[in-house]
Structures are given as structure tokens and as C-alpha cells.
Length: 142
Image (cartoon, rainbow, N blue to C red; front, side, top):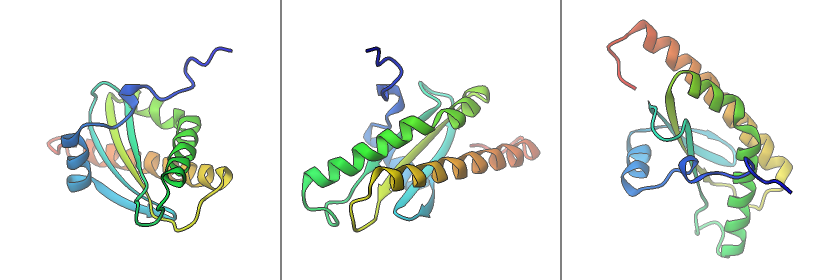
């Protein structure tokens, strides 16, 4: 079996203390239950769409449960992010996204995928709105 293109590359993963810290401090946040998400548009770097998932230990004591939620979230993200990624590539932008799972119970894959699709659609609309408003004000930064 050929699994090329069916995984998240290192460039697509949001990593590095300073990058993550800047996203949480200066990024925009929104909420779609059970995810709180932070996002920030930047000039193009190594990948057009980078993201990370966080599941607090406070809500899920067992690492097995936290890892399952992260695995389901990453899989749903990987399957559904192509439209947003192509929009960002065409405009030479990078979108950094951090998802924080704030739910209290373990989700199933269908629920996770539905919420991730909703988040991606909302990010696409916000990105389009940001592009429209920044074209009106060319001096504004990302």
C-alpha cells in the first residue's frame, strides 16, 4: 500500500516554543464545542497550514484517552484541510492553528470530524474576510 500524502509532515505540525507562545498570546481565539481554537495568519513559511492539538490533563487523567482524542483530531484534520490549504498556497500565506479540546467526554470519530469540518469552514471564511479587509488597507500587517 502507498501511504504517501496520507500523513502530516513535520512542516505541517506547529512546533517550537516561541511560535506556539506567540499564537496563544497574539492569535485570535474562537470556540466550537468541544474545541477552543487559536489562529494567526502569517507570511508564507515552510507550510501553508500548520496546526497542533492539545488535550488538558485536568479533563482526561489517562494518557490513553488524551492520545486517542489527539489521534482522532489529527486524522479528521488531515482528511479535510485540503480546500483551506490550497487557498492559503494561492495567496502565499501561512495559517497557524492550535486546537484545545475542552470537552468532558471522549468523542467518537464522526463527532470529531463534523466539528473539525466546521472549524475549517469557519477558518476559511475568516481568512477570506481578513484578505478582503487587508486589501482595503494595504498598510495593515497580518
